[in-house]
Length: 99
Image 1 (tube, helix red, strand yellow):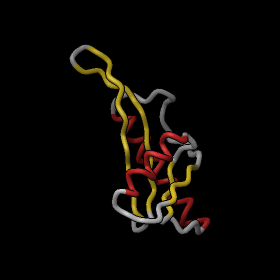
Image 2 (cartoon, rainbow, N blue to C red):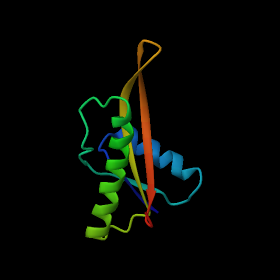
Image 3 (cartoon, rainbow, N blue to C red):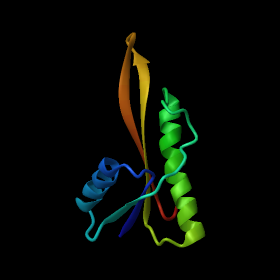
């Protein structure tokens, strides 16, 4: 099973592979650099948008290049201000081959 990850970061790629391997066999996560279309440091909702953009762009790439992937994963780190303090958080978006 091929899973495309919207990053070349080895930690993100191995994390996706490890998570999918808990439910599927023969998992192969492949990282691709994609532009998330958000700020370098996403804030608030921009973080969710970045994760979704990454996953959507991977699906489009898969459709255009016939890469035979079944899932597309976008991971975006961002910050948000809550309780008068800044917090870092991560956001993941998973899209399957049917969209």
